Length: 468
Image 1: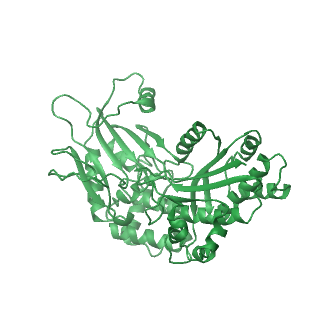
Image 2: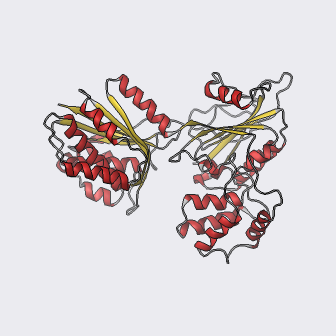
Image 3: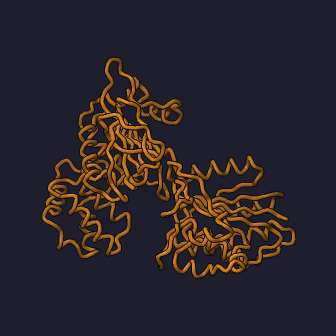
């Protein structure tokens, strides 16, 4: 599947009408007013969405194309939308490079009277490859792969990418100066760091050449650098203007895991649940997170029953220790457990983030389905007391790994029911084959199918408890 992004560009003929507009400005309008309290409104003539297509394509098409219902944009004849496609398999390629250079040319043509709207989501980094000459796309890709193979983390990779890019690390915003720039960002990163999402094309990089050299030394790659990379780093180190700033930019998070969980909480409360959000920063190994949810169900179940059966002080302490081990910021466990005690009815505990799966086999699945399966095993081995428990994990984009499912839901009876059907849960987990398991288990009814949502703000985890 190819990934792509659209760019709406070119000033309209006649009256200065926006090519793209917001029906209800809401927080965007208020934010713009705060940034420019004494100036006349700017006309948004340009719109650049940088995102993979759940329902969008890419940059310019010169001829009308057929209306296709699916993952492509629906464009009317003579549309101003310009479409490029690129970054197949989420990897930078020549098509994405061509689009990136077109975007740079568009940004550089703007004036102080223009407003550039940039829509950004995860995956935008691969859609915007524009190495600083004389570095080639192939050289940049090779260096990135070598760093990744030697264990560099995403922050280190992004530091190198930004240093070698014309558009990342605030480069797009710099190219658009003196136009005002507003970036509307969908966050797919825990904590919503705007400089990390899509490598921050409208956020000035805080890193310098010495940071890059330190990373390259750490992984033993400095001596093997291509001459072109050494040239670019040397030029940046001697730039008399120093690092650029992005004072003409307003970056706004319009979608995030925290916002998604807040809306899910409202919906759960409307359905009669006592709902509490634990954290939007669940990350780490899926095995540890599954154990956390198993312990949470046991401890919360003990709090919800008058006799307090099902958990001891030891389990309660283990739960807090595991939350600390997972580095959950403000997990609100105390509030959640207090809410459980006074609920008097069904409870919904919500969390989100992006767990990781250590691949051991060649099965088919995704982190949500694997997490659900592991939580099902945890629930089955713990005394939960007179409480009905259901756990659900789903990807907000509607697709979990290379499957058509968004995730799955489980109950404590999963392991025993699987055994009765002749399914060995441990064998499926050892091969990371969670999707195959759920397709076979009870005819696939435990799979969560939502369809593609067009928005990726990581995963949502829901733990339901209902006293019998």
